[in-house]
Length: 106
Length: 122
Image 1 (spheres, one colour):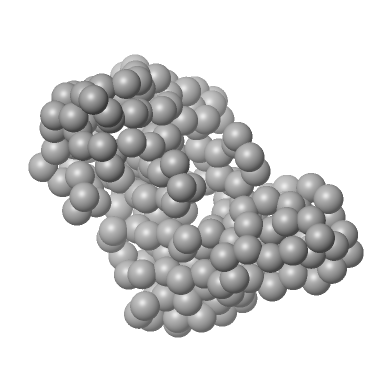
Image 2 (spheres, chains in turn red, cyan):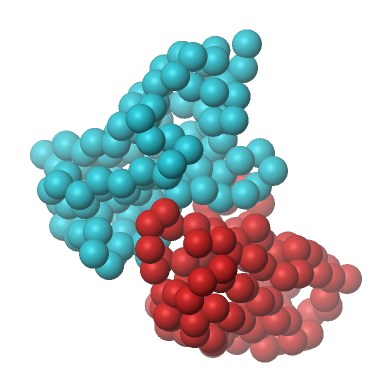
């Protein structure tokens, strides 16, 4: 299953609302996870099963979607949110990731 | 939860390496484990998964037949034997914990190590 993220990068300011989209090449139900990766660090699981926020993840992060189209929304960008975000499907093997969206400071 | 990888390094094409991952802070034998790699261009690729008792194992097509995953629950350790390495295997290899024990519902990668770098070059 191919995962396509858009955009591949974006520039935004602190306080902005940011939306990242992820599209699967076939239906995956809600088996969609979102990760955040900061430079020099391992990816961190933010959201699983499309919309379930992991413990400790700020509520400004939210996920939605099912089937083939998904979104990650950051309601108000904080300085620590500048990072690269990846989607990943856990519907079937091989488990696959999107190409990533780099969120940069405008 | 702590996952510490080791065993990476520089190897010539066609060579072999064995990666290890030492796990602590959780009951290792209760969970499936995975290897995920990140290429220099930053793309992520799932490499292999192994369920709690090593009965269910799966690989990416790109490594099937060349890589072998294993685990030692008594030592809380995960391994990846990599043979016939190719330049395109150059990547940072992460040891990753799954929140479920088996392959029927695996794939939510809840904890990651810091990775070990494998470079395949002559």
